[in-house]
Length: 270
Image (tube, rainbow, N blue to C red; front, top):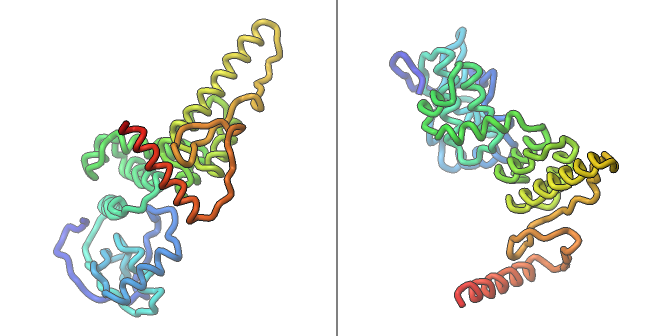
């Protein structure tokens, strides 16, 4: 962590502490703070926050959530580790702490890597070395920053997986990309289904191009492109027109899935 001199541990008034001017996480949910506050109330603060002196006050380097949880509990002071830290060390320390969190979305992770790249001028290889993440993972998360906002939101709120977003992003038409991501968020799809959507659309575009060269109509018939979703049981792609709805309660749905899983396992072993 940051620090050019000896660290000092002390209890500091919350009124003398400033939150980070630029956060690495896009948002901190109220439920998240509520859960942490309850944990601190029951078990105490397990790890002091990290702060650095700034003009007679203290700026949070790491531990913003712990600080907010203390505010939520109405506490007046918080245990802190005080260190002298320069701007680059603060950026790196904040990134390191946030990357240790298990609930980071691909977008949040991309924002962290983007900050290290843009604020510190680091290459992907240098980021990889400093934070011990593979260059491939860093490249993929940085690519999220180039995706349309609709894709970023779907990834951030975990409506689609990274693999699904990447498949749909390869659609060579902006309007169709938006249509696909909307469908994916609404219905939930696998990577295999996303791949089928994109490939079927690309085929229709090529076919339409061939017809146009022969003197036929030049518009792309979006409505004629087959749309697939994943079967809830076997997970294979199935065209929407062949999807069968079965209205059952959650308990019955679980029982059906369990029975089907046993049947599929028996078939696989026979």
